[in-house]
Amino acid sequence: MPTAEKKNKYTVDDYLLLEEGAPFQLINYDLIRSPSPLLAHQLISAKIFHYLYVFLEANNDNGILVSAPIDVKLDDGNVLQPDILYISPQRKEKIVKDRIEGAPDLVVEILSPSNAYYDLRLKKDIYEKYGVKEYIIIDPIAQNADLYVLKDGVYYLHQKAGKNETLNSVLLAGFGLELNKLFK
Image 1: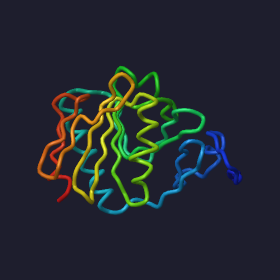
Image 2: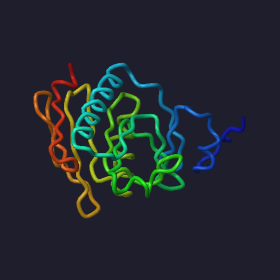
Image 3: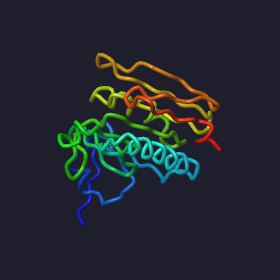
Image 4: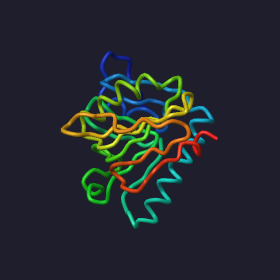
């Protein structure tokens, strides 16, 4: 099987040469390797996915809800794998191909020691640049969450919620994450 050669700048073409399931993301033309997530990360991810799924089903929302790993191609130098993403019914035909090609409407990232820098800085900037409408960052260590909303092309912190609070989505009106249920 072909492999991506060692170089200073990688593209989507290089990324696609990697073995399926390889633990990499393409961030600003750099291949970033991550170990598999910790158990706490995966448990939180499963709970969030479940709560979102139940909410979307109850509201007859036939958008697309996916958990990692799934490639999201934003440009030739950025193929990210958010922990959870949602694409509205109105946009799914436009951006869903074999992979997702374009910005999801909602992205959830759960911080791990190996990825916090990327999720809080680089990926946040990339999601903002490409128009992800709502970006949620869950911090299992601090047991809190930040919800950023895109307004006029710039993220602003809409809500910071602690362990005993509910994080309320703007994009999905009526959806709230009770954080005490995530951090048990």
